[in-house]
Amino acid sequence: MLEASLVDRQDFEDTVVKGKITAIEKDVAVIDVGLKTEGRVPLKEFSQPGKPADLSVGDTVEVFVERVENANGEAVISREKARREEAWDRLEKTFEKNERVDGEIFNRVKGGFTVDLGGAVAFLPGSQVDIRPVRDAGPLMNIPQPFRILKMDKRRGNIVVSRRAILEEDRAEQRQEVVKELNEGDEREGIVKNITEYGAFV
Image (tube, rainbow, N blue to C red):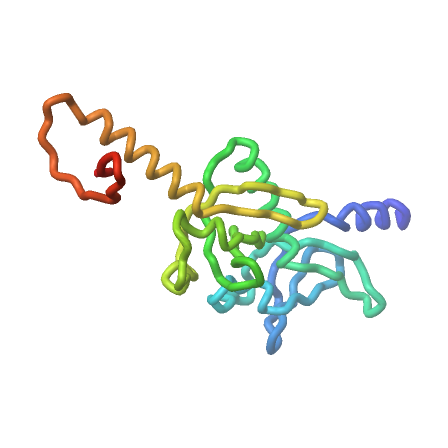
């Protein structure tokens, strides 16, 4: 019976399980995941970028079990890793289908920005923010918007996204819609965008 119990407990490790919050102490949540031992998770792991954690005793949450029991007899669990696992599974399917993914730009880093994709953090290169260079990215920060995943490497925990690709796709669709409406002989107002020796671009 002891051996069977140990096998069952080991099966929990490196998996995402549901647990119940039994107490909230200062800056940690005490969570029972059904292992006869409880684990403690910092409240900050339950918060979203720019948003505080919203938890109550009795809430059911999903956590990642790193170890069934540590030297103190507690389960070593993580909400952050659970969110990351969930997000990676979802994003891999999105990447395979070449679909858009929603995210929020929440920080500026060297060479670009970091984007929260609902649990996984991606890198947005500065060249992929917009079609034209962006001087002030402030208005783009902390608002939900679509991105295109350019590259994923789970082993390295690396995701690269583009906002520019979405803008280019939308502009191409708009151009196609306008072209469909144009007919020879139509009279339309336009804006002169450039003048050259051989003519004007309107």
